[in-house]
Amino acid sequence: MTPDLLEQGARRVEERMAALDAGKHNTASGGRSASNSRVVTSGEVDITHGRILYLEDVSVSFDGFKAINKLSLDIAPGELRCIIGPNGAGKTTMMDIITGKTRPDEGTVFFGSTIDLLRHKEAEIAQLGIGRKFQKPTVFEHLTVFENLELALKTNKGVKASMFFRLDSLQSDRLAEILVTIHLADSVNRMAGNLSHGQKQWLEIGMLLMQDPKLLLLDEPVAGMTDEET
Image 1 (cartoon, helix red, strand yellow):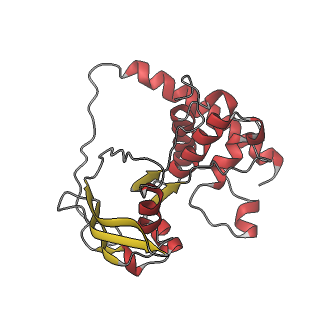
Image 2 (cartoon, rainbow, N blue to C red):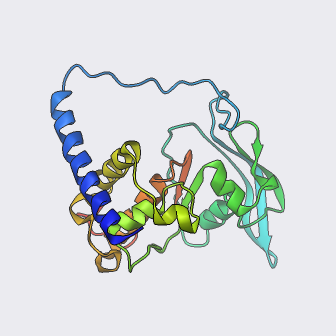
Image 3 (cartoon, one colour):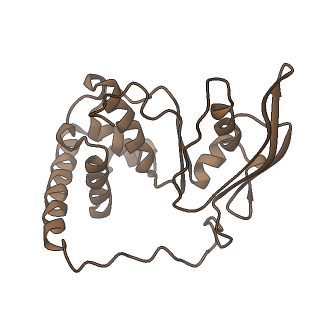
């Protein structure tokens, strides 16, 4: 995207943020939340049985060391689950298995009721809607916060398409909402390399949110953050 288009996009995001802020005041009372229930269609994750992730009797060993032994876990749609344990307990290994980075010796891993994750590769699992943040933040430090979030959008990444890409109104709204969520609304044009460690953590989370994941895995997301940043 050319610099002038980037500036136009940044201005549109700022305008959307102002409009969203005004809308919050106008709907402070009497608003109605949208229903979360929906009919499963082709290409969506089947959550009709009340779970979006299901692991049963998962085990994996590395050179004789049992990293995970008979792990069973199920998570409901919209549920926030914290996995707590000391270093070496297998937390990161569990995420590696869910995202296809590591194959277990035994056990089953399902995304929704019908998608067997053990039959898919890493890239395929990401495309299915599972986002993952690793312990160390990985952002494009030579780009601005705005550019990092824009790059994370699910769009045609071809050369010509990227050259002439413009944010539409829905994408601008989404980007503005995420900037507020990750507390970087005042840093939209700031270079990512100049952010603090905690801000980079938030930016990477925002980049994942831009992809609209159905399941988000965060590995030590607040590591290195100050109390204010968390």
